[in-house]
Image (cartoon, rainbow, N blue to C red; front, side):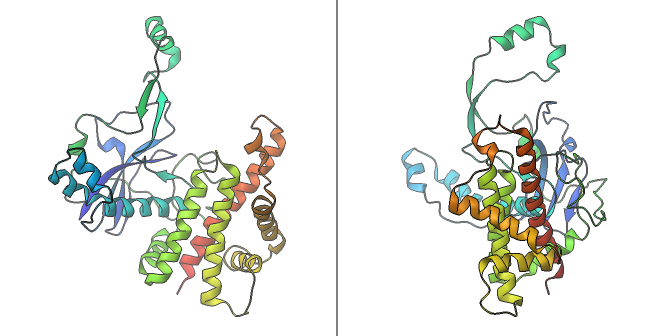
Length: 334
């Protein structure tokens, strides 16, 4: 069954991207009513995707009944968990196999906030500026809504998109100015369709293990700018998970330890002559895990900017190595 929802990315989605008949990204300007803001860093898009309409009992149904929620509403809610799992998996795949972050808002996202004007702050009238100065914070739910949205999310077939992203990018996709900071225009790596084919065609055990590693890597990417040390642990853990699976499936030497599996995996799927560099990655992970040593930016964001930039480059390098290794592993997997 087809579903349609609103997701976000850290760069604008200006063209379509469709993977087989499993999912499709659609630019948000296909809806003329969708609100936009020049200040937004979360760029909305439509995600259309295939998912089984699976009914499952909700763990909090008794609480809903006590609050007077009708049986029909509860029944409809039973279809949501599987839809959300499929959506989350697609967003994690896109995040891990491209240079960008794709995400959705959880139901618990709420903060104190005020509404910014749609126009440039330099162009608003003195009266509007005075209203902004006197604005009162309100408890704000993180969501994206507009009149007519229900109609826009009704779907019975994939939207006809008139311009799609090319997936024949250069071989240095993951290493040449990657990410929204350096290349703020969405692009996709060559052969991403084949990587997705291999992922979905994996046997059940391998599929589950890759899915866990995707979750770790996607979480690390999501936390990259805010929780630097936790982000690195999550990213390195995703590499370790893939390294163990690769070793179990294809390893020839018995009894290889965690660090050697880590370097072996990266040598096989990134570059074969960088053992010392990969050991440095692992050593940084160990300094956080075993010695409690945080990145300086997690301790004091106003401290040594040169040191913070060096840390940023190291974290960016490890994140991209994780993506590149996953990409090559999926491409080469038999």
